[in-house]
Length: 437
Ligand SMILES: [Zn+2]
Image (cartoon, rainbow, N blue to C red; front, side, top):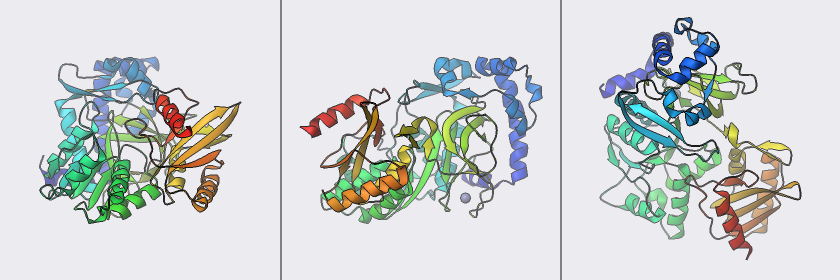
């Protein structure tokens, strides 16, 4: 497919999108029933036959599937077992175990095109020099963004993960590299920016002019910080290895899905019933073109809302509200439900370089210890306490100013709930021991 054709796909007429979705849906349900045990059994459990699924609404008759199903039997969700090309895995940090996702060559090509569309939506062009700092390897993002940028025709610097932030800063500064567009976790740009500034550098004078960040929810205060610090335009993307990818356009207020590839439903996680447009609920996906690991009515655990197909940018594929919360990440703190997103948004509204919020239990009550990387100041401390109280409805047990923060896990978690068991807790205990000495 040539570049023009895939860019054009983002502007299909809504009725054409639905027609294509239904044609592909009928085909994929038949294929799943005949070839993937997981979905054959799901349909059979409610006496459904593939021919009962004709329209998008008919999907509601099929029972949900979930990450747990794929973790339990990864091959049970695979359709075309003979033509598999490769696999990728997702981290098991949510405590649900590792998900193995299989791809045929054709699946991967579709993913590359989806990512090229996302990069195009995020303002990247063939003239960009893309600095790809997402990890290449078992995790799918590095390679799929590499292949997306390749379809777009851009020049790629495959940085992946490097040992230190300085190694990346030096690459970005390298006069022979001159990257214009960054891809990676938002907190990389935050961390490297602070490191660079502390050494007298000026990130805003780098050659980077665009960033496409993904891998974690991005509060508005974090985006603002990145944009100011680096003097660039930052767009947010969202994707799951089981499903595909989506990205913000110039409007910067939601991600456009590739609706020709995926049907998105939003449900009330308690009742399983669909919610109204604009109303928040759990995202449920059905993939239409993949034949390796299939996702049929796959519950994502992510909370968002469908914002409709009308967007001033002209793209016609439905937009989803920016994701703030993974339902698994919601925590009850002192009786109130809080998400890490809310805490991050509150903290980054102030002049800090980073923080770690530790939620723990002592003598049956919740305690919240916050470590802040910033210059010690009573004013800042009071501002942070009042901000947290307003946005997250709890008061921290203490706020301690420190010089350095540990990296908790690959994604550098900033909010850790020690009340839940996780292999990452050990790092937090070690860190807290070291600062209390
Ligand atoms: Zn748009």
